[in-house]
Length: 283
Image (tube, rainbow, N blue to C red; front, side, top):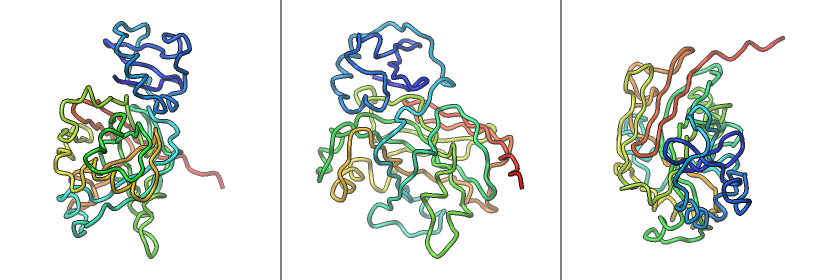
């Protein structure tokens, strides 16, 4: 099953098009994309009976497929080579921070660049499908609704300002958390623990890696988080980025107005962001 958000309505993607879930289910399921994760297994069983689209669908139509999670987690330094290029030792436990929902956008978007040094970080985003509390690693996949593509855009100057890193703020400017175009349920993913992901800028490949290279794979992240907090249906986890970010280059390279960022994860989909200068503030 692949589910998307179009203009705030839950859509099932089938055969190159889409189906409005609330309409096609005669109200059995509502229109709210976020509510889908509260009864995800039931929705998935119903979706298996639908094979023909009733509407067109294009990636440019897709909003964030998880538009209003209760909790947003992100994991830093979760690939060996990314930790090295960032100048940090390999973490002994997951490095966890939060992002803010106001930074969410869909698969195709225009992003205004704040003053500073804006970097790219392609990631697999895991979506929780069942309440999780103290979940053993070997049972963690049972609590995942599906996966989607994400970018954890980062303003490095703000991130490195002050006596301690400002991860949450630096990664939460408007448009800094594009996701989508759909959440793909695990039964449609051949090997969720070994997905290829990457990104390019203006056609030049910047990042390329595999999720099998994670220091802490997705089940370990879920188990670790659930021993501290309760994870709820619809919560999301940005699971970390492979090497190739701008900050780790010599000299560093950052995004500029006019750049086009293309991000992908095999079997899940792709994102496309165009960057423009933010308008000058009126004095």
